[in-house]
Length: 250
Image (cartoon, rainbow, N blue to C red; front, side, top):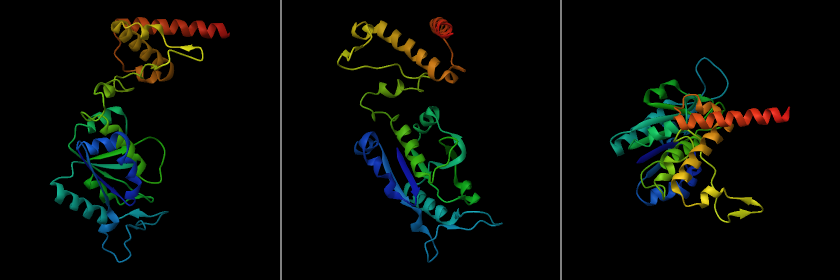
């Protein structure tokens, strides 16, 4: 996968040379290039922003430096792939979006600053993405989150290719509890089933605990979830346990 990033602060992306994303680059699974679009300004002051027509607070990113930077990337690569604008008005980012983007060969991110963008920049954009209902000072952190969540889904990026498919949200439920050595830590013991070596029972326990954790912490995720008969039985069990807990506190 090729990822191009347009940013006024290329040094902010140094964390992408570390950890899983950095290893993907080392393995030649991923190629990341950061372009400072200030280098494409045509004015003597190298300004990339200006006052909005009609008045108003703040400054807007100008279209010209962005367009020229994108033209340069397209000339080098033959295309821009999907062009992603980090913007509060965009589609809310989640695991399904990460999975969708991970199937692409080329992604280009535009990281803005100031009060907003010249609207004409959006003509070059294929996707507008938001991390949620809050505002950051720039698009760099948002781009890194999207890149990290996307890249880890690429084949052979993770040490165990089953890791990504078992993550929270990938299977529609939160991930089950996990434990490592020692089996008894300060009186807290690992569930016996995990020590049994019975893989069928372990798989069933994990599925049930995933459902339990989702029911307790993120019940909204279950609204469109398709339950098996066994999962419906577990759900009724959780509801009975909850009723007993509430009654016991009454």
